[in-house]
Length: 171
Image (cartoon, rainbow, N blue to C red):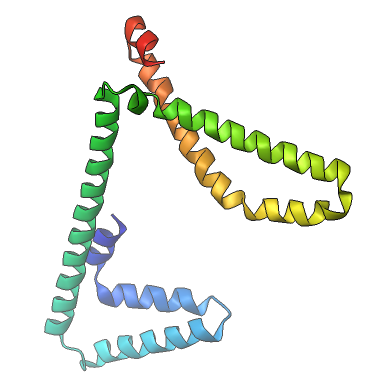
């Protein structure tokens, strides 16, 4: 969506906006990039880059935005087809994938917490290292718990819009 907005406002305005934004960052790299963009802006204003070339660049930007939008739409379509296939599946494992994932997440979380508690209580010399290592796992736990949260949310929606018979068999 942002690509289509940028394609509509055009490259000259985009160059000026990015140049000013980069100047606000105190770094030699961003200042160098801002200087380079200022040179492009000067070339546009002085006519070194023609209006035909700018029109062609804007056309390419619009085409890129269109392609990215189509790719995003296709990705969402594939995700929705996968979810619909899971819901329509008669295979018990496919239908029970969400609870299985939830139980595995709970077991691994509990194992990690019990392991950390053990280290803190019985091997306090290594507790700091273990706690730091646990912090390194926060990203992967964030992903797993996010997926679990989506599963729980979606299952709650399934239950809201299902009849009692369907809820009983889908547990």
